Image 1: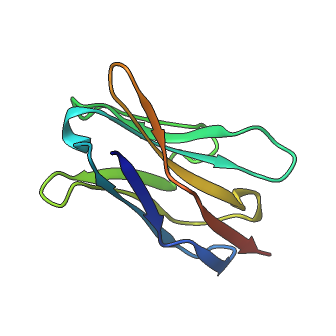
Image 2 (image 1 turned 90 degrees about the vertical axis):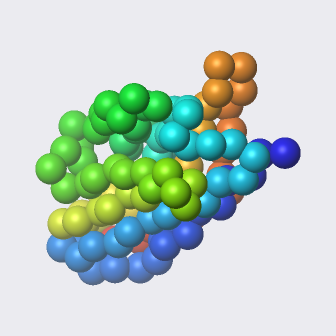
Length: 115
């Protein structure tokens, strides 16, 4: 059974930083796609950042230069370092892992950025 568990969300002032972490069981991040998505109230879920099994990264234009996705293969965790946070970054952030056949989601962690 695959489980993804996010942690690290919280309340931060604009300009501050947070680091989200996704711990996985039942799936190996180094062998699969890992993504971070977010969903703000009244909006669709959107891709924030992703990293492929080969290590290629992709970022939403709105977070380029501020967010960094990484993967710790030894710990089987995936992190999202978020710097220079803005109020518009406020959302529930979800960890996503994909195999060839399946798509898995964590339960989400709330990030709130105050102005």
